[in-house]
Length: 213
Image 1 (cartoon, rainbow, N blue to C red):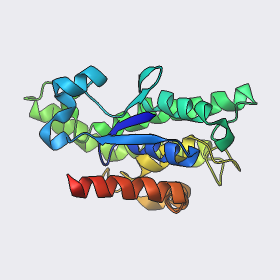
Image 2 (image 1 turned 120 degrees about the vertical axis):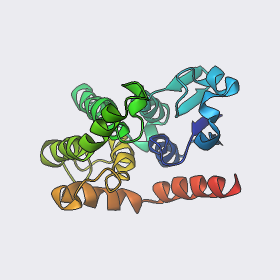
Image 3 (image 1 turned 180 degrees about the vertical axis):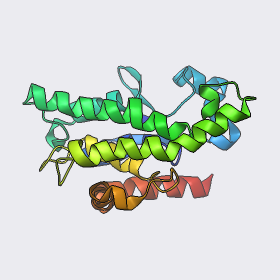
């Protein structure tokens, strides 16, 4: 059985939704950031990077959301979460998810995790990064709005592993200072993914576990 290590309000939600879409048999383990559980010796044995998500499989442990999403799609081909019959189309899926991981998510992280890039005591540098977030995150989503979101789903008519990932990062738009009026297609996409049964199940499960903690 698969086991997903996650924390609420993180990119782990994308894989959680994909597992639900795939009808996978899996369990979840909540990592409490408030208690720094991501840095505990026990969790570092799972993911030495000290981050979520991590997915335990019968072949080993996977980290990094694009890889995990591809694994879920390939492990459950009947769910149709990726175009494996078309090498170029699958490369487009990978390119989109890589962009979210390497550019959009990193721009977002500058708002609260500036210590990854500069000395935590450099208050001016931290503040400068935080001021840049609305501009850099907006630029990333405007590029998606104009040239990457084919509609109605990211890859067009077919729902893929790109969609829960974009949905997850779009949850943070308001806090990142992005004007929704500048990315109406992204906002509409967020609404439609949020209405899917698999998304609702994943969100409810994370909410229930958070309440029980």
